[in-house]
Length: 359
Image (cartoon, rainbow, N blue to C red; front, side):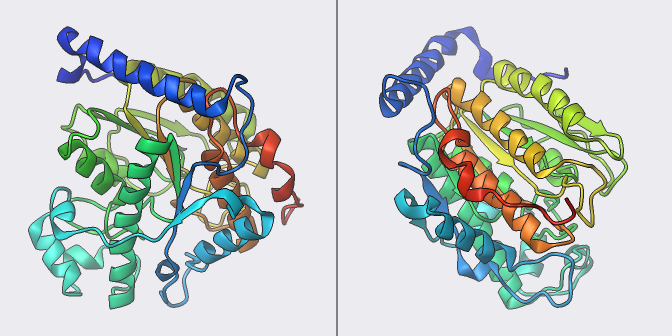
């Protein structure tokens, strides 16, 4: 496994970092009580969402209405009853400038259809621009809550193809990188890891952090698919048609290695719904159960180590939008119910049940 060691691994800092980890684990234990079983969904957790994420992008495979539908599904299921909901503010110019170039941001903010902006596969309008700014602020807000609460969920974000100097895919601003860079610069964290499980590699995130030893980028994706691949710290490119068993085996072998070697203070899980077997833009074959097991695996590995986790939605283009909504809702339940040694499976499994289309 490729590993990068940062200056934060120096022996003189090991004691202080270990003390911080032990204190955090102790706090999680007190929160969970004497048993390590599942806690109630969303207790002491924050969910970030904005109705402005749902904007008009014209006829398109990307269903922006999924954001509101996921929120409504969580509300109807009762999952939101004990959640703290947060409405984000847009990312600031200073926060964006730590990740994106001034020339690109100038074009983007002015809605100029330059080559830098036109590399997106979305139109550029004021409402789309504003939604991207809010999404970048939303991931940062959720990450801040994760650091204090152990876990938080952003019902948005995951725009991992956006590059420092241009848009790409359906992504204008790399919210994952904006959030991590802000927290590093504020010294809220010393190290971060991105665990990207979208069907498409997080090439923008990989490039942004290629020279940043404090950030470990991991991506498990379909190899024979968009985009042109960049070099993450650890990439697992899967064959077309890979299903639940092989996917979960490969992920289960990798995630503990990422967490134990890099020892992040925060994990951002990019939990795309598009590895689903009926996704229009994906070629993997995960079932609804397999995707929920994916999320549970990552959440539990973080929880067992006392590592805060923030989830973002990323892609999802199922033939039936209801399936994409169900997958995203399952991700939110798993993240929001994160607890040391447990998951949402026992506490919130039944309210999300229901047959998938095509099954």
